[in-house]
Length: 81
Image 1 (cartoon, helix red, strand yellow):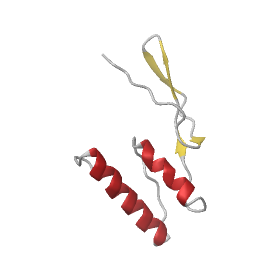
Image 2 (image 1 turned 180 degrees about the vertical axis):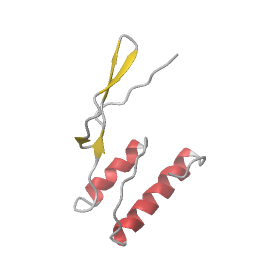
Image 3 (image 1 turned 180 degrees about the horizontal axis):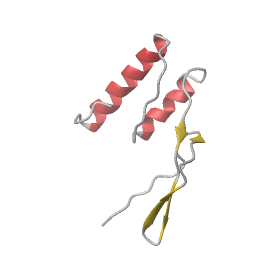
């Protein structure tokens, strides 16, 4: 969401858009790497549910099981060079 925007503005804008969609009883999905947005589930537990995909790294290889899991992502990893 809000591609090309600085991090703070992107978070605040995305949060405002999602909250407005909840107020309007909107339906849909949002894919993001902004983990802060997952806190909206606590604010709107009847309307917002978090899901994630896991990734494993084995000998420098990224492995995906492509299974959708409930809750926000539990770990974040930084991969470098």
